[in-house]
Length: 416
Ligand code: EPZ
Image 1: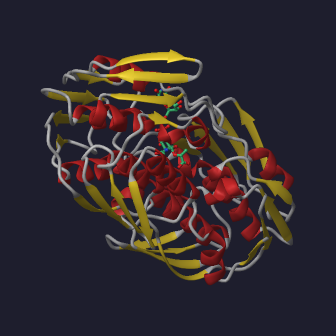
Image 2 (image 1 turned 180 degrees about the vertical axis):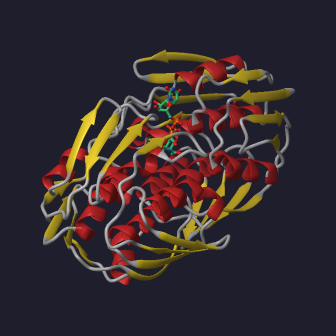
């Protein structure tokens, strides 16, 4: 298990390019199954999760080539309807292949994704909606056996604006007879990116990015070229790296509309943020201000994927902040690790009370999940002395070349 060794106290200064969005390229790669043709996807990040999705596509028969940040998929040769269990277990978000395979073949066998480090991750909203569209889904021995001879459009009211459920419904509905309306749909930018990919492939989807999405079923598709949007969570993470070290960092290739809630909270914490549509500069304060409350919410609210990073920053603030995690049940695993570094944080149910301290001290800490692991690296950048972060495979699932990018900004970080 790899680890990062960080000597804290260096101010980060410089300029970086933000890579393509993990949570956009994963559903788009799943959707390449649908068009029974070729797809060329640009601005794909080099991440473990992307490799797993490409591996899954290969095991069912797709031709997949990767050249730098471009992934080429030919979905014509698919000859398997069963998605291998070990790969689905490795990455639960592969459940969005269920919708893509049902659209293409009207059948799929896929293992239950199971929980992960941040909570049970149920898929009840996915299953309920796909059944409303006409899918017959049997669950047995941890596997889902799905059939859908005649998919027909319908009106779906989501109990919760689930990102994955919205994506699965979109992918099935593009081939369903008639019109599907999704209400209380997720509004994340990654949903818009999936709509754009599918519409270039020949689908008729309207309204992604709003709570009501309309899909008119079609039955023929064509090849696609598509550019993945920038990763708003990777951007937010490097913004916090600048903030927590009192640095001055320029981020290029961002979509500023996707990170307005992150900009607002960093300004509240005392950062200066200057931006145009695709570039942004963050100047960190000498010491962050406390923020009375940070509540994680579905987009356009403050993202749950930035909760741990914000907590790292606020653990050094001049006052007490409260973070309320409303999206996931168990996303505070980084708290005890931050406390080992001298943070003063108490969790009460879905809330964490963070009493800012003057400084953190380097320690041996463990990454327990992707974003929690990132928050430990951020704390290590600011802590006095040496911080060792182990189990960094969690972090490498979502950050492409993290230590190299931080080194380019002046951080003293090594991967061993
Ligand atoms: C996506 O997960 C992201 N993953 C997550 O990013 C992100 O945290 C999450 O959306 C919220 O923004 C990908 O896009 C690959 P949800 P997803 O369905 O689709 C409950 C990261 O760090 N729920 O919106 O699984 C669920 O338990 C990852 O990059 C149900 O109850 O998120 C959770 O509490 C982590 N039943 C809440 O909804 C369902 O059927 C939000 O889940 C589905 C979800």
